[in-house]
Image (tube, rainbow, N blue to C red; front, side, top):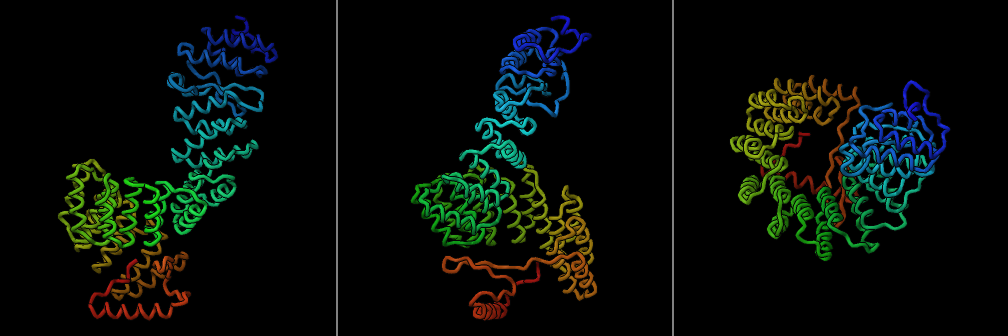
Length: 530
C-alpha cells in the first residue's frame, strides 16, 4: 500500500477490484497523504456503488483531512464532483475549489443531487448550474425545483433558462410542478411566448400559474392581455388572492381603466382580502392614476395598516395631479407618524416642488435625503432638481449643478436641462446641453424633435433643417403620440391623426370646440414638447 501511495511509483491501476479500491480510498483519505488520495481517486473509474465516494466524502467532512491545495483542475469530462457541497456546517469548512474525479456515466446521479443542493445553500448558483450542464445527468425533481427557485429569487433568469435547456438535452420531462416553476421563470424574465406555451400545456392550471401569467403580461406592458387572463381565470371559478389583485390594479392604473378597477375592487372585498398593505397601495395608486382622487384618499384613510409604500402612493398620487400643498402636508404627516421615506417618496416630493416653483423647499428636501435619512440621491433626483431650477429660470445655476453632480454622465439630467433651455429660449446653453445629451443618447428621437421645435420657435430654420436631416439619415422617427380613454367599460386608443374610429368625425369636431373654449379662456396648453 505504501508503495502505491508513494509518488515515485506508478499511478494506481484503474483495474483494481472494487473492495480494494474502496478500502484504499478510505485508508488514504484518513492518512497524512491526502493529496495522493485525491490524485488516486481522480484516476479511477469507479464501477462500484457510491460507497467509495461516501468514504471520501466522510473523510473530507473532517476539517483535519482537508487538502492543502487542489490536486488537479476540474475536468470538462466530470461526471461527479466532491467539494464544498454539503449542507450545514461542512460547507463553511471546505475550501472553495472543487476536487474532481471521473466516473463512468450512470443513469442517475445519487450524489449529484446532494452536491447541487449544497452549492445552492452556500450561494453558489453559477457553479451548480455549470456542474449540472457538464455532467449531462438528470437529477431528482426536487433538485431541479431548488435550482429553478434559486434562479428566480436571485433574478438569475439566464441561469434558469440553462437549467431548462439541460432538461431538454437529457430528455427529462418536467412534471406539473416544475412546469409551473418554469412558467414563473419565463414570465418574470419577459419571455412571454415561452410562458404562454408552458401555461397552455399545464393539465391543471392552479392559482400560482394564473398569477404568474397575469403578472408577466402586466410587467411587460401588455396590461390589456393581463386583464384578459384575469377575466378568464374568474370564468374558470378560481378565487383570486392578494397577488392577483396587486397585478390587476397595476394593470388598471397603467391604462386608466377605472370601471374594471372598481369591479376588481368589489371582487377583492367579496374575497375578504382586506388590510393588505401591498394590495391597498396598488389600489390607491390605481384610483389616483384614474383621476379618482376622492376614492384614493378615502381608501387611504380606511387603511388600518400603512407603511412607506402606502404613504408614497398617496404622495405620488397628489403629485400627479399638481396638488403641491397636499404633497407637502402628506409628507410631513408621514414623517410625524414615524415612517421613513424612501427614494421614490423623495422623487415625488421634489417633482411637486418643481411644479410648484418651491425652490427653497426643494433644496431643503434634497439635502435632507442624505443628512437625515442616509438616502443617496439618484439620477432622477438630480434631474428633478435641474427641472426645479430650470423652471424658475435659473439656467446658469442648473448648468453648474449638473457639472458638479455625480450624475453628469447620465442623460436624464441633461434632458431636464434641454427642456428648461427650450422653455426659456436660451439657445446658447441649449446647444451645449443637447450636444451632451445626444452623446449619451444619440438615437433619442423625442429630444431631437424638442430641439427642432426650440430652433423653430427662435426662427433658426437652418438649424431646424440640420436636426431633421440628422433624423432622416439615422432613420429616427418619433413614435406617434396617443391617448387612451375608457368609454362604456372599453379602453379606446387614439393615435395622432387617427381616423379609424367609427365616430372619428364627431370626436374631432368636439376636440375643435373644446380647443376653442380653452383658447377663449386664455389657457392654451403648450403642445410643442416631447
